[in-house]
Amino acid sequence: MFTDSVELTVSSGKGGQGCVAFRREKFVLNGGPNGGDGGKGGDIWFKCDNNTHTLSHFQRKMHIKADGGRQGEGSNCTGKSGAKKVVIVPPGTQIVDSESGEVLFDMLKHGQEEKFLEGGKGGLGNTHFKSPTNQRPTYAQPGEKGQTRDIKLDLKLIADVGLVGFPNVGKSTLISTVSNARPEIANYEFTTLTPKLGQVNIGDYESFVMADIPGIIGGAHEGKGLGIKFLRHIERTKTLLFMIDLASYRDLKEQIETLKNEVASFSDKLGISRYAIALTRIDIVDPNELNEKIDSFIEMLGLSPTQKSEFDFDTELPYFIQESADETLGYNVEKPYFIVPISSAINKNIEPLKYSLFNLVHQSRK
Image 1 (cartoon, one colour):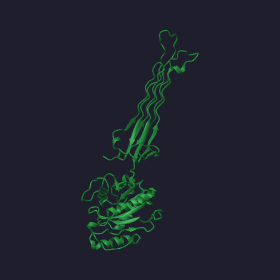
Image 2: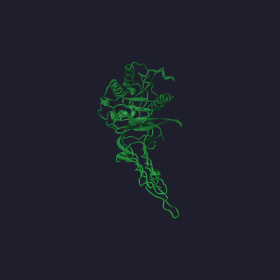
Image 3: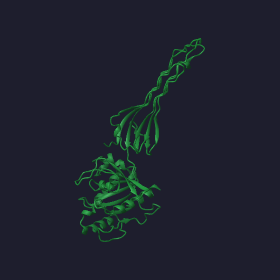
Image 4: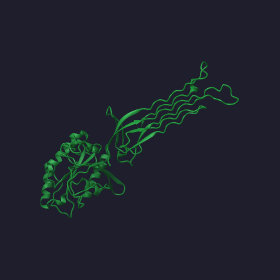
């Protein structure tokens, strides 16, 4: 089960109580007080772990507590401190204060650790309260209470490329073709209900991470459909791949304008992200109409193809790339980095798509 948001109460441990004790040994007269201090309460820590991918393990844990400190003992022995509680979260998790909405920590890197709540101090034993006027103190401090906070954990997936498109445009098929992700795929119109991450390997030593989020519909930024619930999973993504279905009953212009509007309405940052366009399902479009549809779509965007030719299944179909898309990132972010017609079902133009995306990701990383 995929869970990307949970509300929790977390409490650090209470400090142990100080001890009231007196030294009583043979041949030792008036040994005096020797009660030890209480142990410190356990702290609350958060740790980021790549082996965790969801927040579902918090579903039944509404209150997480660290251990309390043990009571002090005689002979000035300090009580044992409470063990710290380490809360494991996946990369991309934000720890948010439930009352103020403030983001307290952003867990991004594997192994990142953050102390959240300090455990209570242990109480002082009666040995600390002896004085010339009180040589037999019978008082010790109680331990300090731990801290308690109500928080919310929000998971926003971290990926290099985010797939954006209407339901049933081939996002899941593409990510299953180019990566190790295995989302559910069917031959009828439905949408993925949970976001998926897949690693796309480029050669032996290079790779990037691709995110498949559920299909977007008009009004998604207002909460329609799955809406905001999953739009936020591409919020950290620097590169978007808009997937436009050539075989859809929706007009190509309507598809790209609706998708760009929803992304920009949800996040100003996403609205100026670098993006590319994949024209999907070219295998089920009439070859006589295919080139015309592609050329008219490119011209509708105010662009011009790098070259034109008749469609041929035996050769790679030419695709548009911005002429100014160079190592200096001097291209126009208002326009796509490239446009490539693809078919995941017959593996058409998938390799050019992979390498073109990697080129864009590589430049973004630098």
